[in-house]
Image (cartoon, rainbow, N blue to C red):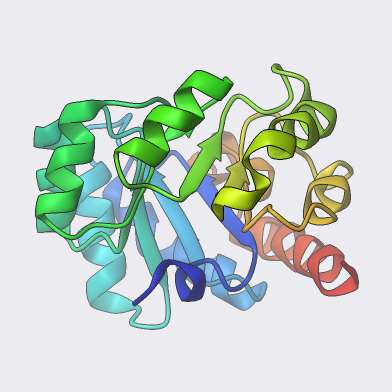
Length: 210
């Protein structure tokens, strides 16, 4: 599956899953709200198992691994069945492993130098993180100026809400937006599946309007 089809819906749910048994119900809640793309962050011990369970149970879901900091984590993500990987920064080890294992990787960037390095390493879809802290939409537009002609696409993540979502989607070089508001860690822990579905459906309406 190519990167553009992975991000076709232009929204990625960034989820922290503490208990692997919550993984499939969470993905089902997102699908019920109209979203098929989830990034399971490697911040918890059960992340790989969560990815494995979603991949086995829900072929309609597109599942990626987030917070990949090392080559070993990239390998673990691929072993679990991840269809893409996301990193908060630019790790050359993780980058090399992703190329070797043919895992589409979205490395994190926030400066022109990091964007240049990511392009040199062969990546065109870059996570702009933490988006809101580093100037949000205006910063992203400024960065696109010198890089728009390179074909680079951005996935802004970090502090984005349903309210700020349309401003990011309006930028042509934004391939998708990463957000955790529709599946906040507390909502997942409390198994608030109907609430997650409702928040997801609202976000998908915003995307349809954009």
